[in-house]
Figure 1 (cartoon, rainbow, N blue to C red):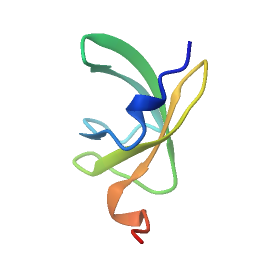
Figure 2: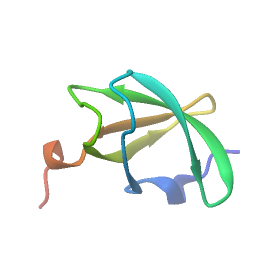
Figure 3: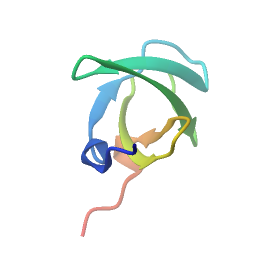
Amino acid sequence: MLDERLLGTTFTLKTDADTGSISLYGIHYHYRVVGLAVAGDLVAVTQVTPLELVVRRAVDLLEY
């Protein structure tokens, strides 16, 4: 079951790897970084799929 409530959730990358895992609200998720991001960057969840969370560097997101 997909949890769309995770959209917009932010966390800080701990490594430079393009994939990894994170525990959010007590549940472990796999994530994949889209675009350029390095360890220490704040990323936001932009898409939720059955296999992973897709994240992008938070400063790259457009705000309207």
